[in-house]
Image (tube, rainbow, N blue to C red; front, side, top):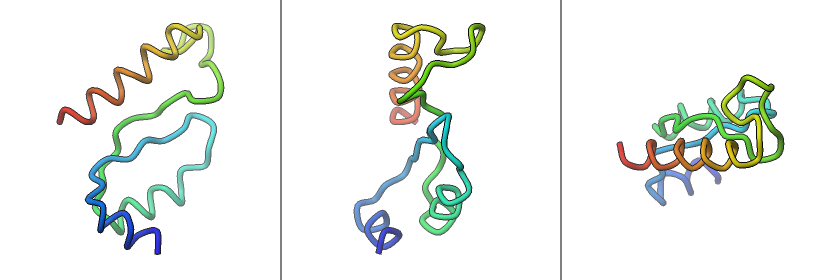
Length: 72
């Protein structure tokens, strides 16, 4: 049902979370034709030298990932 819904809604991008197993998401994407939009940090910060080391950087990074993916 989820694959049918994604196709019906015309979803073209998907986002991965930094802390989740991506296997199922990639299987669904392959079945629907959706393309990766990037990896987001919704629940935790990255390592100190990573792209989301502080809350402000996390918000900026996630926003940029979404804007970039949706503008393609």
